[in-house]
Amino acid sequence: MTGWDRGEEMGSVRWAFRCGSWTPNRCDWLFAARCIQREEKDRIGQFVFAKDAKSAMAGRLLLRRFVCERMGVPWTEIRLERSPRGKPYLAAPLKVHHTHASCSVRVSSDSGGAWSFNLSHQGDYAVLAAERGVQVGVDIMKTTMPGSSSVPEFFRIMTRQFTAHEWSVIQSASSEHQQLAAFYRHWALKESFIKAIGTGLGFNLQRVEFHLPSEPLTQDRVLRQTKMHLDEEEEADWIFEESLLDVDHHVAVALGPADKADAARHPSSLPPPTTFTLLSFSDLTASASPLTEEDPAYWDSFKMKAEAPQRQTHTSK
Ligand SMILES: CC(C)(COP(=O)(O)OP(=O)(O)OC[C@H]1O[C@@H](n2cnc3c(N)ncnc32)[C@H](O)[C@@H]1OP(=O)(O)O)[C@@H](O)C(=O)NCCC(=O)NCCS
Image (cartoon, rainbow, N blue to C red):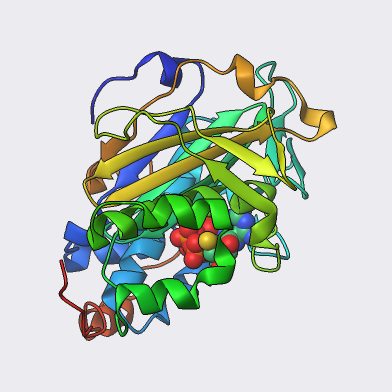
C-alpha cells in the first residue's frame, strides 16, 4: 500500500482490491469468513460462482476495514445493515448516529462532518469510496464485449438507459471498443449518482444526463470536470470524480450535498481528488478480528465453485 496523499489526510478514502487475481487459500478464505457478519457470510456462501463470492467478500472486508481504521470503531463492534433498498450503513455501535436516507453516519464528537461511504464490485475489482460531510456513491465498470449480441444490438437494447446527447457522444467514438468504453464510462457515472442517493432500481435514468469535458480520461489521474444535468438543468452542487483503474475499468465517484442535518461541507470545498490505492489481502485483514467460529464446510463449498460462467463473446475487437 502506498502512503497517503493530501486527500486522504483530509478524510477522502479511495480503496481498491483486485479480486480478479485473488486466489484465496483455505486459511485466508476461512479467516475472511469469520471476520464478517454471519448473514453476509451466508449470503456470500450462496453465490454459484467463486468470482461473485470473492468480490462480495472483498467488499465486506473493505467496508469493515474502513469503519475500523478511519471511523475508529473496533472490528468486533461494527454492525453493518442495509437500507430497504440495499445500501449498507453503519447501524452500531450506538454512539454513532446514522441517517437512513443518506446512509451516512456521524460520530457525536466529530467536527469533520458525517462519514458517507459506498461500495462497488464489477470486473476485476472491488472499490470503496468514503468522504466526510458529503454524500458518496461509487461505481466501477469493466469494458467488455456484450455476451450474446453484437455491439449495435446491445446498444439498441440499452437505448432507454441514456439520453440522445449521451448516445451521440457514445456513438461518435472511433471504434466499437471505444464506443463500449464510452458506454461504460457513462454507465458508471449514472450508477454512481444513483448509488449516492441510494434509490437503486426505479430511478428514471433519462432524468440525469452527463456532459464530459474535452480533456481525455487517462490512467493515474482523476478527472473532476464532468457535469451532470438533472431534469435538463446543470446540477452545480454535484461533483463527479472519474478515473481508470486500468485500461478497462472505469470508476466514477459521485459527491453531493449531504442531508441538511449533516451538512458540514459543500462538495466544492473538497480537497484535491485522491487516486485509488490498491490494497492487498493482508491490508484488508490487518485490523480484522473474528466474529464467528471457523466453519471448515465453508471452504469445501467454496472450492467446488466454478470461477465464472462460460461466456460466448463476440470478437469484433
Ligand atoms: C444495486 C444497485 C445499487 C447497484 O448495483 P450494481 O451496479 O449491480 O452493483 P455494484 O457492484 O456497483 O454495487 C453493489 C454494492 O452497492 C451497494 N448497494 C446496494 N444497494 C445499494 C443502493 N440502493 N444504493 C447504494 N449502494 C447500494 C452494496 O454495498 C452492494 O454490494 P454488496 O451487496 O456486496 O454489499 C442498483 O443501482 C442497481 O441494481 N442498478 C442497476 C440499474 C440500472 O439499470 N443501471 C443502468 C445504469 S446506465
